[in-house]
Image 1 (tube, rainbow, N blue to C red):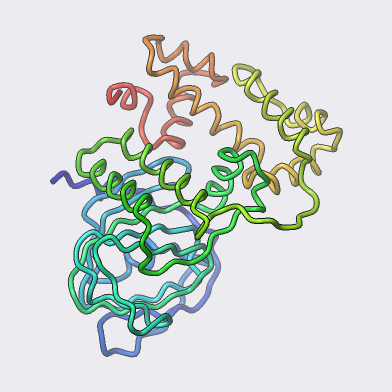
Image 2: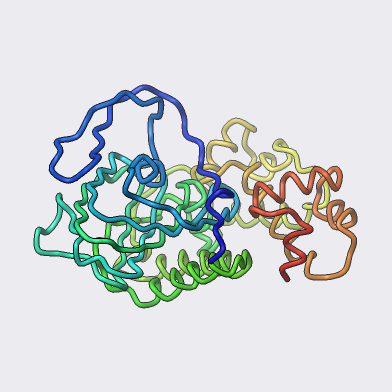
Length: 321
């Protein structure tokens, strides 16, 4: 089994002092400590446990990632975690229960847990089990929602799920595990994309629901802006040019774009350039030529941006095609 843990890059979070309670072994009441982290991720909480072991991981770009874990004889408390976490039990799980949930509910192979950003939970683990985690920052989840369904990102709904049966999501998260074991970055990326899409179309979870919203960009303005971005990816795209499409000041446009799409205009353009580069890397054009066609100032600029957005360099990505 190939060990990729050393390559895992955990997302960074804004720093602020707060008190968290951590449990180090069953039967102990826990210890409070001050940490310089305003919102820790589920990954961060797990990493602090001496019982949890990460055996593999993969960087999926733009702060998204996945990891394969095992744990046993532990007690975990996730206090208002940052980012959204999808968890699938692979083996074992009967000795895992959620302390702040139904006392009779127990984990099992194939059980799905969804831990949305800001939702606290406590867990007791008495037997060894293995599970895979998919981590997605809130801004990227909203961007993927807006891009997939052409809907305002504020319509996104992410409820909790504990030990749920979701065959479609379980299948793609198992594919994620297989991709990590094989070191197949493309397969992992496809599994992540399909997992998020299946989640959003499932009426029990991310199914789109009616919700009154105000502000943001009108649908016809959103379409015009995205069409402009796609048509000018090979050029310098200026904030004032995008704002002019919506007849707004640059300041108000930036706020309304983020409300509608979950990310800044710069973040959206960066994603689209990386996606176009991925498509062009399937051909035989030199990387320097692809960099120019995607709006990067140089090949080195593309390499830096591509690594940040895709988790690998353009050359490594092409080799895996």
